Image (cartoon, rainbow, N blue to C red):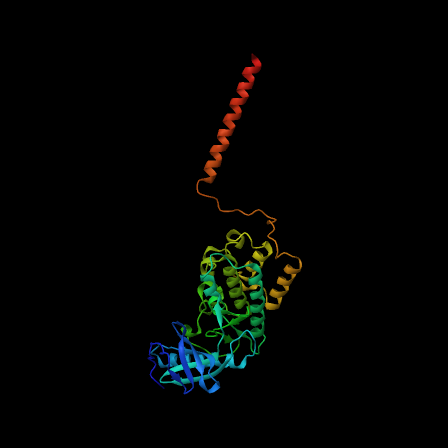
Length: 336
């Protein structure tokens, strides 16, 4: 085994890996590794993405588990055939560093697109992406055993030039009932803003409904322009997320309720699976509830400005005084 202390420096442009992959530039970097744009010289310089895994752990057991989890991600992406997933076709080690080679997708992540906007996305765009994301998750959940993605968030959703959706990171995906144990820090809990309560430290057990929560939280961000409050904070306050319509009044009421159900803190209160989620969305669209924003049938208390209640009380008192004075003047005039 090579030393677990891997080099932290980025690969230089011009570096050749495995005798065939020519590194041109970095596409991005994170705590667990980097992704590079490269050319496959054995395939007529076709563009590829090369993902590097970094493990900073000094514990040999954790190091081995990290390598195995990286290999598992490669196996997932090599075996799964879906247009919304990025195909992996090579995995190798070189000089103590581990690399995965994947198809290159030209586009932007939704997180990058959000950073460039001053307002939420248009509803039609969001609904088109949502349909594709549901198709991808349903495909994963229907595998044998089911595969949980566990890290749905804007940063892991790539939109290509044809407006097609791709999930780009399977670093903490795992199979249900796989019976193997991975280190907690590698297995991961997902991103706190989009992670369901049961995924924190494995509390309550994760299943397909955990991915549904993360999809709902991602949808919340796209519709509101801001991430939802963390599930752990909502649980402490014993409430659901703030209504989308308080942030973006253009969101139809039924879609607001749809997202709230997907994000229910208790997984038993969410959609049971993607099929049920899709059926509800289709029902809403058929009833044209996605094209307008009807008023709620029940009254909703909206936040008031500081001092607004006091000002209203003073205005009411002044109005009463004026009416009493007018009445008194009328009586005086009538008596004369």
